[in-house]
Image 1 (spheres, rainbow, N blue to C red):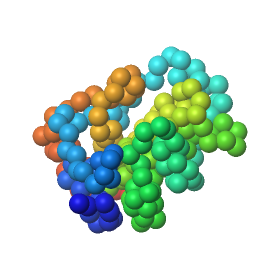
Image 2: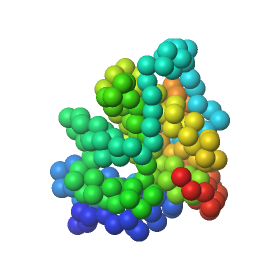
Image 3: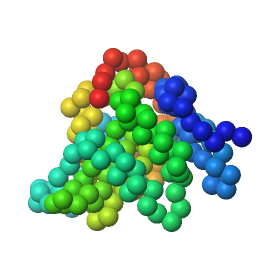
Image 4: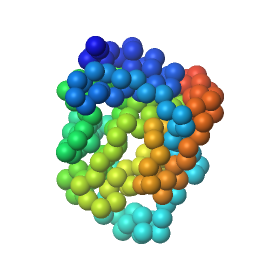
Length: 192
C-alpha cells in the first residue's frame, strides 16, 4: 500500500494524464485518469455579468506564489478533504522545485480565496480552490486564466466537470483528446 509521493513520480504522472488522491479511510495513494476530462479553454473563460461587476469594483486583488501553503490550507479547510499531510509535503516540494504554484485572492490584507496546481511545460493542472467570501474562488480562476494566457500556456486542466466550473466555461473532452492536448502542452519549453 503506497502512502507517499515523490516529486519525480508526480511530475511523470501529470505529464501522462494521471493525478493522485488518497483513499479516504486508508490514505493509500490512488491514481486517476478520468474519461472524460474537464478543461477550461484558455480562450473560453465565461465571465458572468455579476463577476465582471465584482472585478470592476476592485475589492479583490491577487498575487502569485506569495502564500502557497496558505492556499493549500484554505483548500483543505473543509469537513472532508483529500489534502492530507503527505499532499502538503509533496506539493510543497513541487512548489520549491518550481512545478507547483498558487494564486491568492485578497480583500485588503486577508486572503479570501485561491487556487493551486501543478505546472509542466505549457500545461497547468488545477488541483483545488477555495473561497472565504462569495465569488473569491471564481475571481481566483479568472486571474489564473489571465496569468496562463500572459505566460502563453495552452492547457488548463480541472479534473472533473462540476456545475460551478461549467458556469466558468469548463467543458469535458475525451481522454484521447486530452492526451493529445497534454502531450503538445508539456512538450513546450514554457516556464511559469
